[in-house]
Length: 132
Image 1 (tube, rainbow, N blue to C red):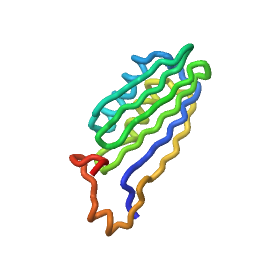
Image 2: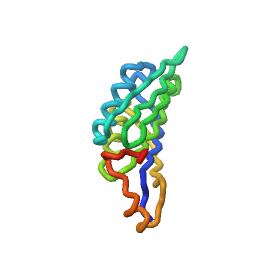
Image 3: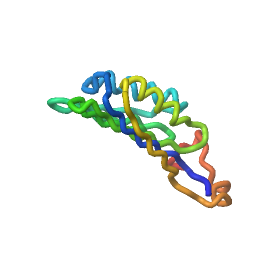
Image 4: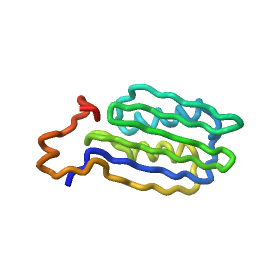
C-alpha cells in the first residue's frame, strides 16, 4: 500500500508563546509551511474574543490548520500534505519551537492508502498538487 498523503495531528501543551497573537501564530504557520517545502497558496487567520486564534494555510500539497487556547497554554494543529516532496516533520519542529511547547504529542496518519500498482498509475506530483 502507498499513501497519497501524510497527516500529522499535533497537540502542544504548556506553550510559552503568545497564542492570542494572530500575527505570531500566522508567522509560525507560514514558516512551518516553508520549512516543509510546501507551496503556499493562501492563508487566513482569525482572532476570537476574548482570546484564541484559528487559521489555515492552504498549500498546493493540501493544508496546515491551527487552533489555539491561550488560557490553557494549548494549541492543536493539523499538518496535511500529499506528494513525496513535502516534509511535515520539519514543519512540526518549527511550530513546536515557535510556540515553546513544553509537552506535545503527535499522531502520524497515512491518508489515501492505495495499492502500489494503482499509485504508480495515478501518482501525484508537486506540480499537480492534491487536486489532480
